[in-house]
Image (cartoon, rainbow, N blue to C red; front, side, top):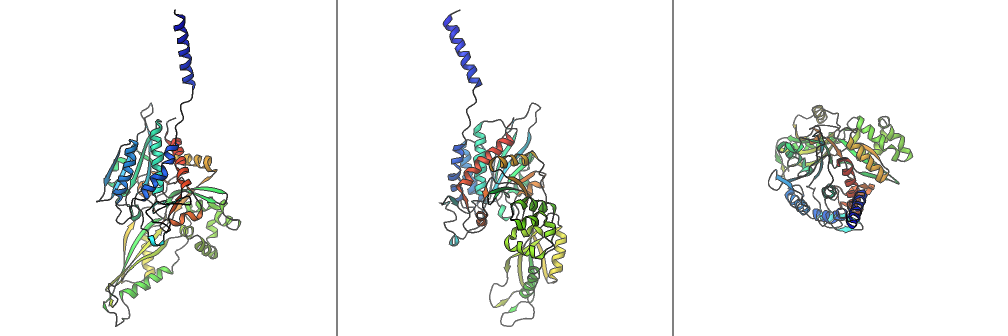
Length: 470
């Protein structure tokens, strides 16, 4: 044997053994973290106010980001300009040919309107001021959509084998009920959800209470029941007031609704939410929150809660807000019809039919008709799932936080998927101070740069925990 050849063979074998024993080069997440802020700025500059929506602009923007990453996607319009987009990272079956149930990352492209006269910056500028990114949709939900996307792109780039399919889906029309977005996809692209077991959407986030953090995960929500009241009467001239008109009847009926406090009804999910939040309250409220069913018998407590935290108070009973009024087209004409629209929200155990009977009794006027504009079915997602446990693990590791299952007073698109039996959670990987959420549907909506960058890291960690094959 040639001695040099033998020596080289031994050295080569030794080098291979060292290489095999060396850890694989760690995946660098930071480029995806750093790109999140500029990508969000561009998304906020894409005007998708609903109505009319124009979500296809958002689809084009997100599509360019996916194209740059080399990830295939599909899109479809439910109506002209009402675009929806979806992309897939496929999982790998185990030796028995099985894949775990798929996960959907969902956000909506549309945003509500914004009056620039009352904003610190142009609502569609994406301007960065004092560590915050301003823009309509920064929280609801373009910020979440970009964080989901960056984590999704990073997961693809990591090359790790996935135990389940992971979908990234962006939809139209959530702000108006979702019929052109999530609802349309469920109806017209049902194959997308045939093997889906889990979905992450808006509706929950971390909250800072002094030095403590709680991570809120939405598991159910109040059910919207949007109504139109139409009052009819004899038309006439404004110079000759009548005893009653369509307008005066409607005003009287609306005042009866305004004066009504619907009965307190503490459903189990709400009781659990208040109990979970009790440790974060000041000493005077702690026991009240922990025993909310008993505390709700105290009228003074209810009044104080309503003044201080109307969102929390709304979870204790059915509610109706009078939001739109329409009467005559001319100031000197008494109209034959006058109408109002109500945003009613029912607790998940309530019957819409029984509620409408109750409302008719309250109005007590046969000249006022009630029409249902929109209503959903109630559903609750369980918390004894692997995904909930994974969220808890990430919350604990990153923030030392406990999860608090919550009930949302508003609605999201999650109800479409809960109706399909898909476990759906409202979860955003952000930690908000109390003041930061005030801009949602209001003035100066903003999200901190740190929430976006830390959010990508948290969300990627969650995807690794839940979707990477072990």
